[in-house]
Length: 133
Image 1 (cartoon, helix red, strand yellow):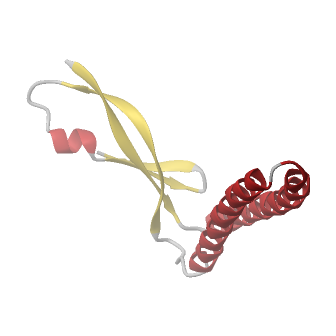
Image 2: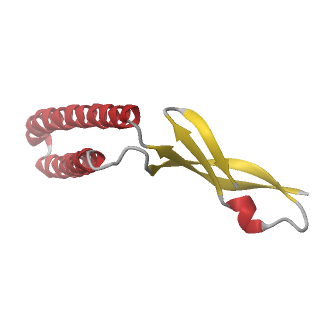
Image 3: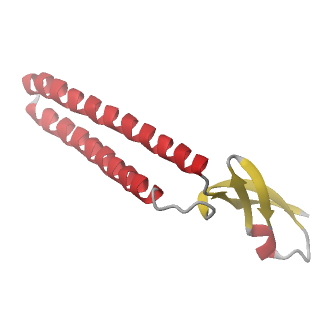
């Protein structure tokens, strides 16, 4: 017998509660990202003034770094806004992929590899309603 790591797919049955929780999580993430963007803008202005006095070349490099971070946050925000839009199209009762996790499984000679590796846990409003192996 050997113990191996496997990926377990987590699925959720869409309910009103699930949609509300997902929407709240997405909105919370967007707020956090918007605060990070504001902080980056503040840092950018503050550092530019300080750096231009000392070494202009460092100021430009630091501004580029901050701009890159700001761009990443803006892209993430846009992705989350799209998820909010797609959330409205989720139909009650359908299954959606909610994530993955890692788990251990014992493997013995003669085991069906596909059955061991293809595992799904189905949740409905935070409760396990089915385990598919």
